[in-house]
Image (cartoon, rainbow, N blue to C red):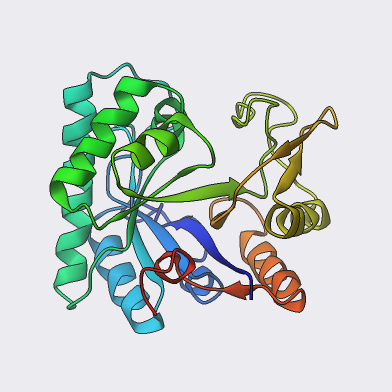
Length: 259
């Protein structure tokens, strides 16, 4: 039976500000990426979501971003490899503390926004992040853009790499995501997103806006928690996949690391 992880970026409120229905999303997906306080999120949010993820059996991941609350981590920053390493360690360690307080462990690490995009093709940045994860806990799964520089480098280092695909974003012919500034970057039609999810999992392919079909590997599909109708889309995608006989499971099971 085919299996795939369904993940969502959550915990992206801050203080009195909320974003998305985290509790409901948690019940629809198999893994979550929780903001660790730099691009969004705070200690109370991390505490609550770690507790809920354990209770629901959902894989918990640290969503590591740039120190950019005002720009939601989506602004480009020029940082050194040392900064990339330290930013990663700081945020992963923060969420791990909450997980451990419930006798729970992190499943994975996923970068956020501009940090994610830059590390997907910038070799030195990718290496710094991967070295930080390897030094902290080499058993953590690294969730990263399918077939990216970071994915390839992580595999060379012997890390546990999960290839991620986005059902609500358009791709370029080189496999990189279209920048959010592009008018066709986001996919707003739920049916189009569902069709893409099925094609990614069942045929390992995705089409660019120009109609070019490219190969893609999808261990995990992402539904962004901060987009309108994210909850309904997550429900529909899961249902469509399950109808096709695809089993939705956390990353550790998809990669054969736990049973």
